[in-house]
Image (tube, rainbow, N blue to C red; front, side, top):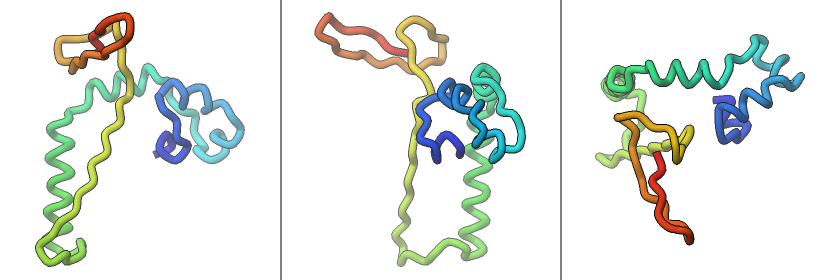
Length: 108
């Protein structure tokens, strides 16, 4: 949430900004490094998280906590690209081809 509110584009930017007096006072705890955040996200079970979010949605819908939209439901999904690389990748990394004036490059 801090990254969203501060419009920080990467975990490294958060790590650099975390030394400011404002963040130390507001967060009250030291922030972890960008490497630690990366390791935690790499170990995160995305499927389990997806099921948990769906479970919460089902409960909210069943308890009528979500507004009645006359059969119309609106959903907003925002994806955040945490990092990209032209050099480092793993077997599960998505790939895309970037078209440059100097030629095409595969980005992971």
